[in-house]
Image (cartoon, rainbow over all chains, first blue to last red):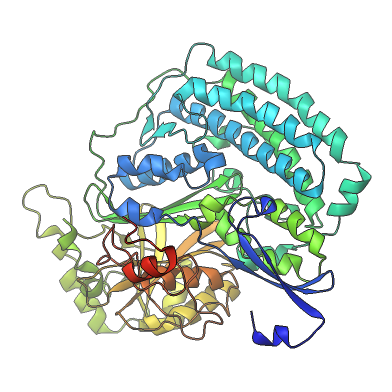
Length: 370
Length: 218
């Protein structure tokens, strides 16, 4: 923050975080204020930096797999899927169809869990207490399915390079169907609480606007980009893991404000259910593990593979030197890149909007800092 | 295995010989000389020590060659993913050209790879995506330690934090960057963690003692 800030008596520098309930972790934001108006922000991050990329270089490909769950820990399955796909790309193998279908189901379920956590905490930041309990109630059902499938609820390590380790448990399909049937009315319930709620609308409309050009300029992806009117989703644009087999829409909005991002994410949850319903009725029989040796040892080379994680484009750029350990494993985290647009979104807004905008970006600091 | 990383520097220039129109005789001759090499060191069925990339044959690759000539060292494709190797000082013009003329309007990522045994120690990798073409391409430059590549912030705003992270982790400074500070590590930290000569449990002892009040973080 420049020194001149302190010379002008009408300007105030306010520190927010890193221990602040509305920053969703250990994000520190320095706000430059003129009264209630935000003149500028600076993000200070890195409090949760664990050197994930360095760890990758010192572990074998299979050993590093559980670590990726610890980045975006509310969407661990998406992280795992991206990593497995990237290593599979380097090995030039594909997971068998059955594994792909199960991966899609679990990843979509995880997308719902992640969006539910976003909705609950975002609403809580705005001042609506009720939704957080409702959201966690349904999220619990999703986590129970993860637990039944692989024994873990959050950092699941559900997938393996080449496919799956575990066959689905008895009654898996029925659990998914039950969840789908149970969940759609619940989304309506949340919408009833919020969508036309006057306080909700007043707090979100025209707040934190980021238009399509700015999104591209800042590299912002995911629901934030779609809320600005860009119909782009990697599941459609460059399908992976068999997404091309399922019918679903890419929800978009036009204004790119916080309310639109809310609308987009709500619709995304419905679309995820749609995908899960199709996938669960058509899980093919067959093996769940592709032709991958006990020792994962890709040829010398490099690959960049990305997926549509709940927060945006999650990419892995892996360089192999022909050994059993990645020579370099770069993670392209959606949260980190999206967070950079925070300053643009808040600029000129009110201090009360800061928590709304941080909430709507849906960042997870574990992924920002890695 | 890690020792076999010589390739990039010496191997980089030749492969793309396809576009016959402009290249002068000399590079073509060199290409012919180098191409058989990857096959040679493999009497036993040993995987090649360099990436088995093949020349990237496309309109864009030809356009780039035409426009930038020998400032493009290589256009290649591996596992269906295309990449361009440019001379260090041409990275920004190439990125600009790709953005304005070829619709690569979204900079996905900037990162680096450390090859301590190579003369040009670092790869700096720009990953681009084009919304209209639904296509990805990587632009790479090979730079020696201490070389300061020009910043890409003027082309894509998102480069700001991404370059800061590269600086933080590798110590590669970007010339003309508006805010070249560390981003993830503490500002006073000594050392660049993602360099290969930085140990996995290494730390800045002094920083830890001064700021955390403990003898060691291990």
